[in-house]
Image 1 (cartoon, one colour):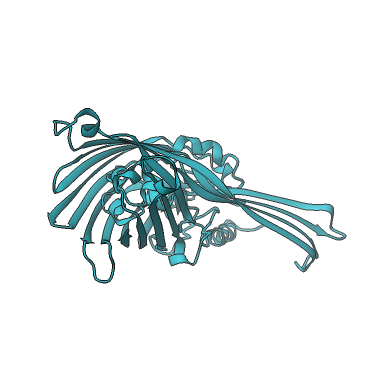
Image 2 (tube, rainbow, N blue to C red; image 1 turned 135 degrees about the horizontal axis):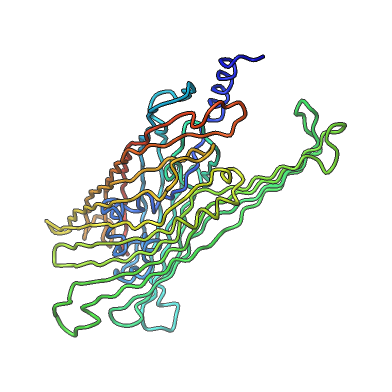
Length: 444
């Protein structure tokens, strides 16, 4: 008979193997951090009123607010220190220190906005915007990881897949602009057939891989209240209101494998099917109000995120379907302001309070962790109106953001055979995230 100590040792070793490096990220670049420095620095409070190309994601209708075309390039570095401190365990301490993950996300960003009016018969300007971001400074377009974890994994942090948005906008009447764009993600499928022996040597292999785009809508409308209600200066001058809807999206991978081992497994063979998703963005409805004066502006945004729909999505996920994860819809308040203390020098700051959408404090095998967050941002921008060589202005921007994660306890539970008791460990999730970003925009 195998002693209890030997069984416990084997179970602990198995957990260590299973916990190798799983990090299934349900966040995305724009929602988790922000796209351009103004979005990062204002904690996305002023993103509904940002006329740069990131408007294609947050509020495409605001592309009309700056009639100039622009070409933008930038870098974003997210430095994550995510912790899970063991509170109690049943002898299966499988972690090495409190730090669970410190792998950064590193994006190169590129965007363009242009006026398409000359291509149409309309008198009112029509604007087109494009925005893209690629992980590891342009080296990794399909960042994807989905798996179980014995030590825990954070819900919304990790490497980010390709970020891609395309949209347009026009001012339909004086003071009222509308816009629409598409968020594009990739859904990949792989089919494999092979003959194998018990040593794993294969022959007669066949592998087919395909990836197709998934297009989700983003809609926005902006009202310049003063322009709509007043012919001249009045009480409502300087006030703007914006409403934006972003449809849910995700990155998805499906794998179907068929293995035949002559003499052991006959045709059609051993069938394996995996269907999993990553980088989920819920339906988001955002309402914002901004007041703009001569040298400053301030705004507030209320953002509703419909995370509860993810429960049904995960039931179709063959990696996470056993976890019985529960989510709540959340409402996020964001406050931001921008000042111009000196001509063409802008200072941006913002704060946001984000409640965790993860209702479950235990998720079998998957071990998702997530906490409430307080987000602070600060940034500076400089516009060179008469740069050397170039005929049009140049805008330089830098942004910083800190996300402070509030402590929250989770029970780690497993279905692995031989486990004598559940939960096998209770941990306290905490940590902080520092985001640094910069961009260069050429106006034309």
